[in-house]
Length: 337
Length: 263
Image (cartoon, rainbow over the protein chains, first blue to last red):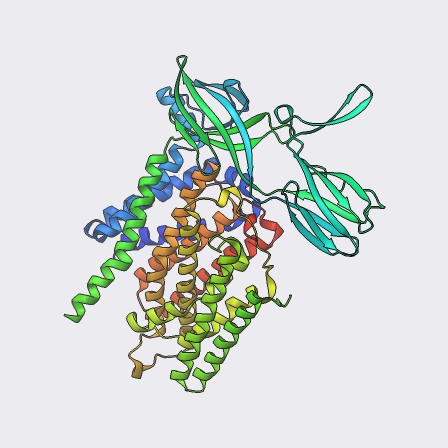
């Protein structure tokens, strides 16, 4: 290996080892601080050096040009790094200054049910920016796994999972009697009407899931209890049975409409793993109103540089499999012949 | 540490027992009986995995218990490497099979869990499965690397590769899978969390493990087989980082992040 080639190779190896240790260090810092670390000016210099060394490899090592798989691997790495830098915070700033492209890199928007919104709280610059179109939230809902369960626990630690089926009596044993779920509530409310307490379910005005449970002792005494999902431990010290109502969330769904120039251009229900793509932005289900279920919080991210990164990934994967699997298989076959 | 007095637990212990018995039998030069016991252990390990699948109603790769249960089905990899790649270490694989089932049998909780929304994606199974398969190949590479460092030569009678070359061949098979796992994970990150790279501790450790093998290839390209001990050290370092990625990141509170559900 010539001296110049050796220098390039050692430089490449040094950058790889440095990135190994930086990654380990970054892992100890946590995601947020690691992101800051890898987006500093020295880090930008490092990433640029990495791209230059990869490019220099093509000039110095003819093998990288001659063997397609190796070209794909190294070109793939260059594209991933370039795409990452182009889509970074600094990349967006540069595009704004050089080309006047003022795109939101990442931010969040809260939309109330039935309302239309185009304001995005931008994280990088801590300001509110506007999208060139609006989003309407038709409805937000939580979906739970079925069946749901009422958990019944005795003071001795014995427990049962009672399926939430209205009207079905569940036998706990000869000493304890039965429990029956009488009614389910999405938003449990108590109203006083004519000096009388009235229990109602008002799902449109809030979120307070609960169960009405009838406990029947072996002696025939009946007791009615209300069990709340969001307020566990709502029991009296003298209660023999501890009841809790826990549901497992299966999905968060926001029903959205994109409105541009006064017209609905896209309609989509977004869920976790099913974002909406429109106008160079991806919209993700990020958070929601846990108190009343009245609004959703969407994460907005720009697609700048994403194409380069994905192209790089494809080239990298294809190149690695071609070089290490397919070429080796062909080489073995040739040897045998 | 807890003993599982359940059907699931019994299947795991039976598979471990068969693997250990296969290991001892092979050490005593009863190779055929060793292979038979190894196959028997594999059938039980598959049953344990299938039972779990039936129990939780989704592909059981959600948490560390399920991941180690999956890793216990190592037999086809051993057979493939032995028959087609001329890589030995069969005895070591039997031991690896028993070792990876140990955490499933005694350490991790087997309480069935529902899939959280983030895991309800078609990328979940290929991402985890590809990683697990690559880890098995890398574990075999590490075994060969340790043999190289210990000065063990290859068995000429069986026409198997020497430890250094076997290490390289195993990494050649495992590295594309490791790359695919990383890329699929990144793609999934974009689909689920909005970014293809979130600088999460698990992501950074998996990048570090990928880079160690990238370093291995470049170092081996520079020096070839002239420095077999350093080549082997790279391979062992890669496995050490994989273990941290798989275990420490999920178990330690030091690395709280987006992958915390996998504990």
